[in-house]
Amino acid sequence: MIKLINALGQEKTLPITMHWRRVPLEIEVPSQPLYGRDGEVVTGKPRRRPRAFTLEGSIYHPGKSQIEQEADALLAFLMQMPVKVYRQHYHDRYLLAYPQGAAQDWLDAGAELSLKIPMVALDPYWYGPEVELTLSGTQTISVDGTEPSIPFMRSTGSASGLTVSNQTTGKQIVVSGASGVIRVDSVNHVVTIDGEERLDLVNDEWVLRGFELVPGDNLISTSTQITMTYRPRW
Image (cartoon, rainbow, N blue to C red; front, side, top):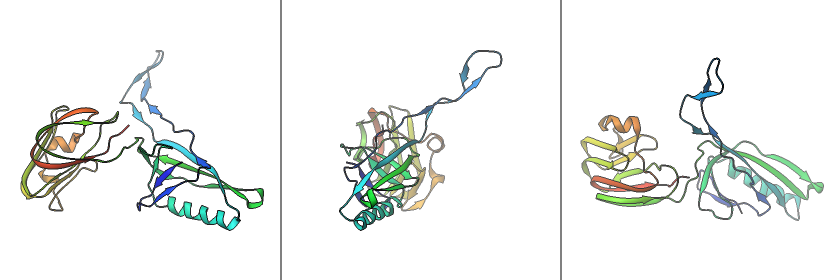
C-alpha cells in the first residue's frame, strides 16, 4: 500500500486498490552539435530531471456517498502540498511531490470510482529517515545513500563562533564575529545566531559551494559541540 504525508504532517495510507507502477529516472546530458562533424560534444554537467509518475486505481464502497466522501477527503489531503510519497511496501524512502490534477471516471452506475492523479517530484531524489548526530572534536560518521546529503547544523549551546570541516570533501563552514546559538541551514543557505539571520558572518567558500556529506565515511571536525541532522539521498 502507498503511504502519504502532506505538508500539514497528516498521514494517509491509500487503499490497496490504488498503486503506482512506474517511477522514471531521466538524466539530461547537455550537448552541442559541431559544424560539419558527426555527433555532439558535452557542454555541461549531466543532471537528473524531475520525476513524473501517476497514482492510480479505484475506490469501492457499498454506497456512492461513501465513495464521494473518500475521494473528497483524498483530494483535500493532496492539496496540502508538497506531499511525501513513500515507496510501496517498504515505506522507508519518499519522494517530495506535487499533484497535477485528478482525473475521475465513475463506473458501474457509481459503484466504482477510477482515479488517476499525476504527480511530479521536482526534487528527483529519494529521501530516507532523518539522522541526528551529536558531534564534537574530530569524528568519522558513516552516511547511507548514493548521493551527497545536505545537513543542518546547530551549536548545542552559546558559542563565540563555529568552524565545521569535512576533511573527506575539503569543504568547510566558518561563522565568526558574534556569539550565541548558531544554526546553519546548508539546504537553503541560511545562518542564524540566536534566531537572527547573519549571512554576513559566514565564509565565502560556504556561500559559493555549500557543505555536504558524501556516501560512506566522512571525517568531520568541529570547533564546538554541534547537533547535525540530515537525510540520506538516493
